[in-house]
Structures are given as structure tokens and as C-alpha cells.
Image 1 (cartoon, one colour):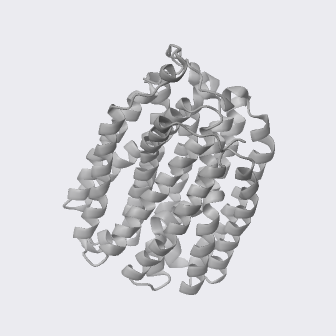
Image 2 (cartoon, rainbow, N blue to C red; image 1 turned 90 degrees about the vertical axis):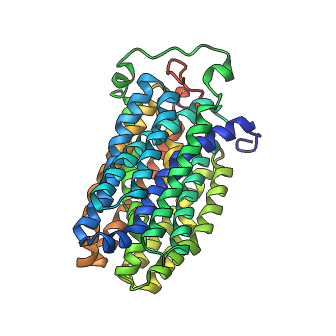
Image 3 (spheres, rainbow, N blue to C red; image 1 turned 135 degrees about the vertical axis):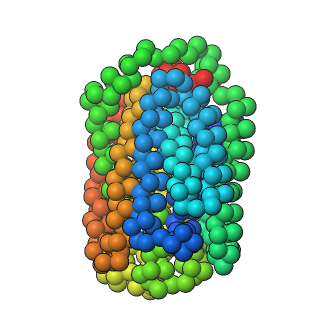
Length: 419
């Protein structure tokens, strides 16, 4: 049965190192969220400046995804895979040591671009290495790393919630350390298409991957996965960046209580993400999506009906953490690897990441002001987006996954350079 066949340890190692892109992406976004109120006080920020910082990190991730995915398909996924993580480390060091808001913005710019470049590239690398019967689990495992990135950032935010800027620097400092360690390990990783198949990898002709994007085989799954990710992500990104901020400013929770609430529910999400990994190569992956999508919508309806009141938010967090692992970004990652053509996988997924993160950046800029004007309007808007995501997911499951081509399901096209 698919999903029960043992996966070799070297492939799990590759998935873990690729998953660090998700760990650092989530860690960066959530660290900015956890530290946002502290930055606001330390740098005397208004609501628009607070929104601008969140918008810049998300916007840079968008640009990095677009450029990084394309560069990976042209010049070698492993080459980009190794160096974008090093650039992230440099940017995280700048954020950690920033003496003022201008330096902070420079660090955010560098880390955002590097994080964005690493997302589609790392997924393409692990997908290239994975046999079709293991691809779902290995790609889904990167989502476990994403959850761990959130967990570590929120845990440190809770523990260090009374230490001001010192705590904020420690939270971002661990990202720099993690990135440097990952860079060292990735540089020594010996895993490629040649190793697993004995065939020689030849570079794709310049421009061929870009030309192949405009075919039906690439456009339809790219559009569908984009619609799912952008609508689902508007809700997830808002609570990823502004969860603590909204609990403090809308629900009247203290900084310690707000970070504690986030921390208390994260273990549920981590455990259930591991459960998703177990079913990622089986029919249960898509069966569970239908139930989880409904529960996820219900969570946002409750938050909206209570206009962000603390009791309503507590119920929201419970339902959201139970449903999100089975109807969220992990699905997008697996569906993308299954339905997108192999030779354009880095470029096309980078494109969907970029467009989505661009939308998230614009939304992030207005979120603090909209929350100040009407929390109910903000929450109902997100509820509508989650509903649209559910319909997009059903279309992918019922139409695209069954008709996915052999090129998308099987081993990656060896014309694409992996070294």
C-alpha cells in the first residue's frame, strides 16, 4: 500500500535539509509577528509602519520565490539551494544586531529574498530525489519543519516575552544559527538524480523551461494551486504575522498571554502534521481534506461572529489547529509536486509562491489599520477566502490529481540540472 513502503534514511535527510527552507520561512514571519509590538515600542512605530514591516518581509519572499525558482531551473537547483540559505543567515544576523528601524528593514529585505528563493528550490530538490511512491511523504515532511519553525519562534517569544529587545534579538538570532548550520550540512549533502539512477544529468536548454510554462499541462495546475494557496494563505498568513498582535490589540490579551495561547495550541498542529505525512502518499490525504476544510471554515466563522473576542479566539485556535494540517499548505506542496511538469517545477512553483506572497504583502500592509477599524470586517473577509480555498482544493482533488501526467508523478526530468 502506498504510504507504508519504507523510505531510505538518506532521502529523509534530504527532506529535512530541504524542509529547513520552510522552518526559516515560518520562523522569519512568526518572529516578526512575535516581535512586532516590541519593535513598535522600541522604534516608536505607528500602525502603518508596523504594517509596512510585515508587508516588506512578505513581499521580499514573493520576489525571492519568483527569481529563485527560475534561477534554480536554469543554473542548477543544488547550486541555488546551497547559497540562498547562506544569504538568509547574513540577513538574520543584520536583523538580530539592528540598532534602528532602517537597519532592521535592510535585514528583513535580505532574509525575505533569500527565504523566498529557497522555498521552491528546496521543494524541487527533494522532489527530484524522491521516487513517486515516496514523494508525498517527503514533500509533506517539509511542512513538519514549517510547523517547528512556528513552534520555536512562539516558544521563545513566550519565554522571553518580558525581556524586550534582548528577547527579540535572541528569537531572530536562532534563525541565523539554524541557517548557518543548514548551509554547512547542505554543502556536504551527496544526493542527486545521478546517484539514484546512474544516469547523467544534462542542463536544460536556456529558456526551454520558461517556454514550457505556457502550455496547458503547466498552466492549469499552476493556476489551480495558486488559487488554493493564495486564498488559504490570506488567512494563515494574517494569523502567522499578526496572531500575537491581534490578540493583544483586539482581544485585550497581554503579550505573555497572547504568546502563551499560540504556544499552547502549536503541539496539536505539529502532531497532526506528522499524521498528514503518514497519509500523504495514500488516498486518505485527499479524503481528509474535505472534512478539515469544513472545520477550518467553521473556525473562522466563530472568530468572525465574536469579532475577535478572547473566548471566540480560543475556540478558533482549537478548531484551526485541528484542521489546518489536513487542509493547508502541506496539501499545496504535495499537489504542486504531483501535478506540475518536472522540468518547470522550480519556475512554476516559484511563480505561484511569488504571486501569493505578493498578495499577502499587500494584505499585511493594510491589516493593522483594518483590525483597528473593524476586526469583524477583517475576520469575515478571511472567512470568505477560506471558503474559496476549499472549493479550489476540491477541484484539484477531483480533476487535476487523477489526470496528473506521468512526468509529474514519476521521477524528475533528468534534463534539469540538480548539481
